[in-house]
Length: 415
Image (cartoon, rainbow, N blue to C red; front, side, top):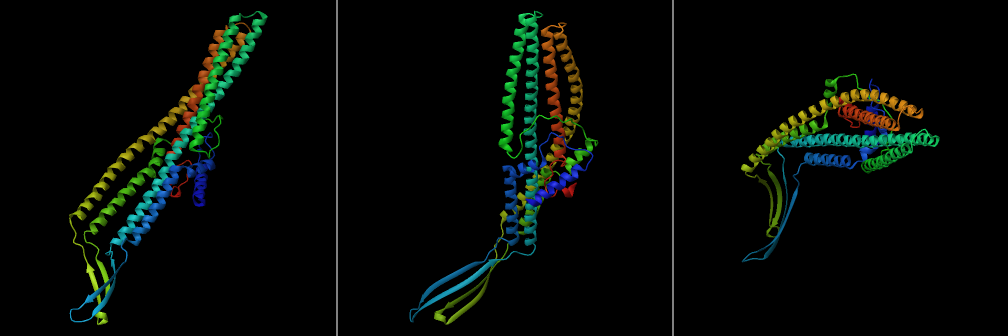
């Protein structure tokens, strides 16, 4: 674990030294590391890696083991005494030259594939973490805005009540202000429930993470273009490499099956004592199986599966290329949309403030004032949602490009 943590911190240092940094509303890197390490999907992939390493050791050692043969018999002669006889033998199948090297290579490819599966498990788990984290962020942001809306409408109600008492406004205005406040309070309670649910979901899957907050972080695109980030996404993708390692392993297994068309011989050494010790026999035995069509068919099975893996690699590459392009487009479009919505929300907010001031002075009706306040809230909600969506898209872009939460030891070798 210390080995992995060292690489994690190394990756963080490498990334922090670049000109572009991750969105500031992400969880702390140390907490993310603990959450990924403790996730069942990652732990299962790590256990499969241990199994692959054990399997590699088994293949290197070979499956042929010594066999011991013991026998005892009693010989009865028609014209003589009875004799107690016994024999002992030991035998073992011998792996022919070349097969041991193939077995070792197959085991090594299996370990390499399991390592890539572990990296892919961490990557997919990090994607899930991002989705849940930003869902919690959005819920908290909406809750904060609705609470702010309640505060503003409470102030609006106090102003309206004051004008009603002075006789500057009708009683109907007080009822309208009370209704708007009640509606906002209801929406705030619903937002609070959504925030609790989002936090519960995050804590259920990643209890190591701290609670999400509602702090603002401005989204910003990196200077490098789409081709740069798409190239990083495909340069060392664990899913592609896992399929490639599986294909290479199947090719080796096909070679091994082809080598098995010449069966391994079984060599034995035996000793027997017969005729009460009058005869002592020492011998050597050699057993060779006669190969059939099943061995040739097994070669075809592995080769066909390897070709299937080749097609799967092409399909995975196409899908990841589309995902990489989509990551960039979502991030760039999100930043642009956020900037426009932010400017619009600021203008609508100023209009709402002026409307409230105009109502205090008796220059505008309450309906127009409440409508302006509602428009300002909707603009703020849309802006906040787009800000979080843009930051999530940027974080996803960095994550898929292996520039965020670097934790795999082999990642540093491919930067």
